[in-house]
Image (cartoon, rainbow, N blue to C red; front, top):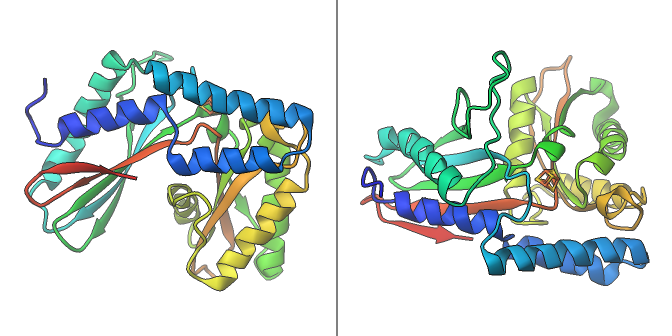
Length: 288
Ligand code: SF4
């Protein structure tokens, strides 16, 4: 048992929980999609996904053979005395989770071609965000490889405005969504620099399902894109139906006059994520 940090056991159990079950908002979203779906084949796929989730949860088994790349979104209070302990503790917990849940070893050294488990250079992915205060919030996401392959950076003509962004993202999503294990959640990061656009897209994915951006113009974009994607008819698992995406989460940053990068990040139906909050004294709790 790790005694390095007081939150290690809470985080390990949180990863276990996230690996064998879906968050309640995703389950509710899948149930809503099932209720609205008219295609028999699409209904069968949604029912199978929900049954798969129930069986995995009740038996404590990973709900997909692809247990994903471990990604941590860390909102770190700059006054916390635990900052230096966060990264080593995440590596330790991922090693233990890999052995005990178990998680599929999914990190490959691209030069050696060797599987290094789930901890190696750059993995787990840790996205740091420094914020005021002494609290640390860690959101764990298991990022499936199929949906990761559908992510992209689009360089949209800067004079096209919001309609140009919508057309480019829609064309990309329609092309790749069938291979991303839909229904998907679509993260879109508009503007900034190329790296920022993708980071915004990834961070948008961890919002509660369907939580609109606070800016009404961005929220309207989210609705338009979701409607357009679901009119494509791609459907659950790409075999036809009215639910290709459960939600679109968009965010934006100001851009250079000559540049309009748009990051697109897709998450599959197996949207395994969970958040742990660490107080100033190191006490930890799971938050939805
Ligand atoms: S993309 Fe998602 S649902 Fe598809 S195999 Fe990977 S983890 Fe499983």
